[in-house]
Length: 596
Ligand code: HEM
View 1 (cartoon, rainbow, N blue to C red):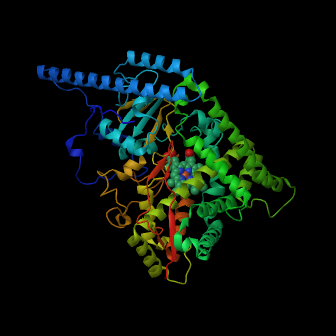
View 2: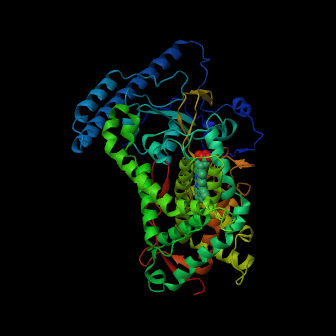
View 3: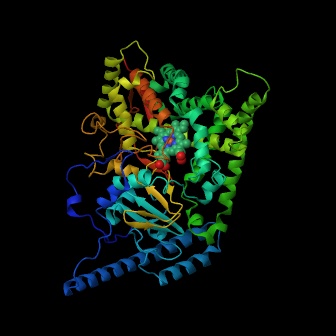
């Protein structure tokens, strides 16, 4: 649905439009006062004007414009409601036919310009019951929210039924949310579907900020997120990747001529990497029944959780009974999925751990450490299974999407691909393998990975944050329990902050942006946050970055990757979900031996 154009309440001052890219680097010593001393250019201006007649005329004209905008909103809302009612009616819930129009009528009848709490961030006028939902629709993706931010400023608010969404689109305010006020905004919002998939926050990724989260993060760090873990497993990672290269090289008929969708083979590689680290278990091939089952469970979980289909019941509690079928499907899937993890993997390691006496097999893999923490009473058996759940979604999919984007871009930019290959030849030579210990020498390859994550952030709005108590942001009051999203994609793609951001140009990270690193702490440039930053940032960065560089480096060294015959460029259209972003069409790539 097209969003009706509402005049900006806090327009950008002319000096902020265009001009040289700005950068904002913060270190952990940065304080809130920086924000206060340099208020956002869009923040509500105090009304210091004198009360002249011309001012009054201007205000009257502005009021008329706002009224006109509201009428437009109401009209759009009615049309949207009509459409919604019809689609709901055509589905399975005739009772909605009575409820929805009544609610819409009530909402539009009492339409008011007040968008909620005093001093709330700017945003479009909301109608009761629906808020802005009928205006903005379901797909609140990073591009749409970036467009809205040019109207409403770097922090704005949307009301989505009973939910309150606050969108942050500027590096200084991102610093506030993620770093300076990282505790205040360190929780995660609830939603009816994620409540099921996380057992109301028994996990780590989606749980509230507090003791439980701290314990889970501590327990997970040692077995998953340290340099020692990288050293322990890097030979295994490299072997899994070399197997991908060998399989493609052996497949002359398909891979080297017509090309094939390499995604499934890469998915097997990532499952093997993560399941070997977690359980000391792996899969034989893409046809291994256990692999087929694991990927089915996880992709169905992603589909149900990332879908927009359930928004209506999440936003509007009176409609929740109509969501029962959907929620039952989620519950059923989750029960079967967790049983799959438990029976096939966790219980096997539990038996090893429970066997009395010393055993060299104990503490072999990550789950053993997690089970040890359970034995010590730090976490419960339910927490254990949700750690497994979290790794399945947080670790595998994000990394797979990033590899897919990187390969599509190097196929579409043959000069970049050649440069990576030349760098490997010049720096590492033809005989030495590419390993975790020598990838740091490949500066251009690292730049390719950064540029991929900049242009195609797999989690463009980060995982949503939430404030448990009422908070202040950019001079506005943020009601407690708001869902706060940082539009990290826009921070990394705003033409005011980056030179030609729409171009895939890794050279920027060796040139004008060479000081910018992909990091979650230390010297952070708040324009580039593919892994977030601060307390809730991604701890998996320590694994993800070397895995990405290794697999892309190994494939580029061995193959000249090109589009399939008859195709000039790979399609890099996006497909998003509640907060995920991946390539819409999995690429078909032809792999010609690089020396040919
Ligand atoms: C390219 C790959 C990856 C990307 C782009 C990515 C990105 C992110 C982002 C944006 C967040 C949320 C940050 C925030 O809310 O402020 C996050 C959280 C998280 N990621 Fe990753 N991630 C990746 C790979 C991984 C891997 C490999 C693992 C585990 C092995 C992992 C585990 C986690 C966990 C556990 C959290 C939740 C942290 C918390 O809530 O405290 N991620 N990730």
